Image 1 (cartoon, rainbow, N blue to C red):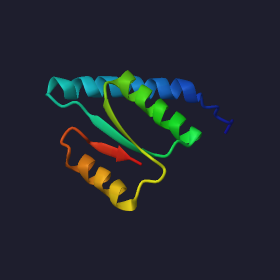
Image 2: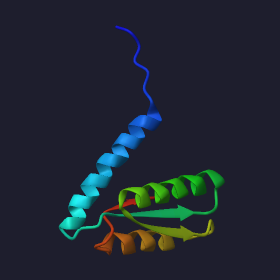
Image 3: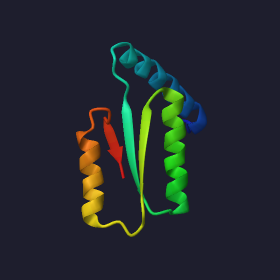
Image 4: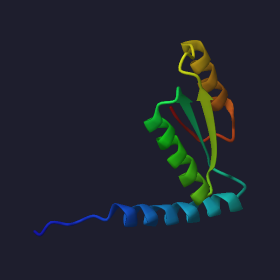
Length: 96
């Protein structure tokens, strides 16, 4: 069997188009998907990653809610932020 070369950009674009359609259907039913992210500190790679997720959310119709916490955040403060997001009915997923 010959090797199959995958085009990541093309596949990503296809997935995003599918997500746009799915979020439109949800919006028609009054549901706007929400993705929350918690960024601790200012690691350049993490900042870039969060920025890309924000852009992707905007592109497909997902509401993004980012929480930026300082590097010196305490465990209790971080857990409080997670709990707040867990209780928010507009948040359907969280990444940290």
